[in-house]
Length: 144
Image (tube, rainbow, N blue to C red; front, side, top):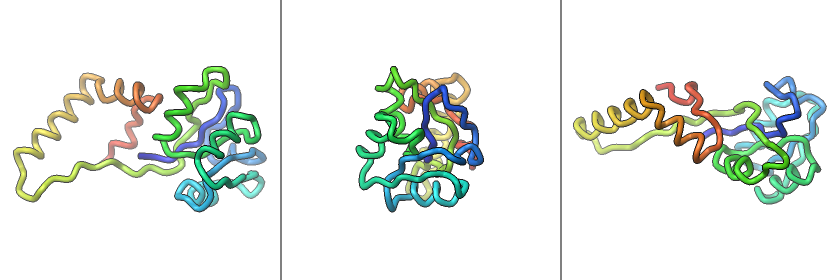
């Protein structure tokens, strides 16, 4: 899971410094809000909304230039807004995914690790990321 800045392809945004003087929709009081508030330059116009539907609507309608959401929410917008041509600009915060196992499950742990390694090697994990999250797999999200 990660939090991303999403915007139209035509808008040049590559990092935190590019948020200066931009209007950005975010869900009030969330981890997205905290992450954006910490990262954005003082001149960024952060518009806080009470729910994700309002954040998405503000972005789609042009009320804001950008939005900050989790990759799960962002994937839905990327999949459905062909006219706007939204894209992920950059990640604000990454929270690695983990798989929990009972203690002493060495055989299962090896099987899971082998399956993930195989999916990485044959490109299936990247394909899944593109299919479900509408963005390529980011190698930085795979760190131990």
